[in-house]
Image (cartoon, rainbow, N blue to C red):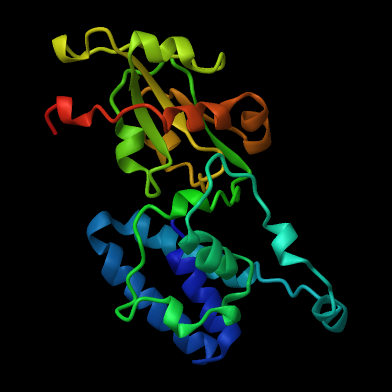
Length: 244
């Protein structure tokens, strides 16, 4: 699952920064030093992975001139529907960066210290994952581990009141919240954002009961998970009611 040693080996092989044999020797020494406390088996596996990476390299030939002349309308390619109208910072800066038009930006449009507004990535909706996590609420034990470990905060727990549950999409499958009197009357669900998830599978691997499975992003959108997420974003944050 971790590919740093593999990519390092490939870098040295392709870049020519060092002779391959010298680079691999140094890399293997680093592997031994890094993983020595985990046992000889782990060290051996990582060294074999480095060697296999070099052996598996294959040259991909393509028409360089033809590729360079491809006409692509990046604005249309990255066009997206948003459930809310973004602010000027998104339309005038972030959208231009994402559509490879960063050269159109003026220095005066950026903050002098390089700071950017918070909470802007939720407008990106890149939809880059082939598959995204979907919860089986019959298995979910409401531990929130998946949300805590997600590096992009795209899978989160939500607590709905009875009134909010009545307004939820038909695809919203929830269970009575557990955990004591503070949760009384609330309904719990884990929901991922199909268009924001990167498909890394960290959450599915971390789930202690196997309640999450990866499904096609396009299928999840058709099944209503994008609508679920959009609705979840309208639900009040009840985090202050509970101890951290």
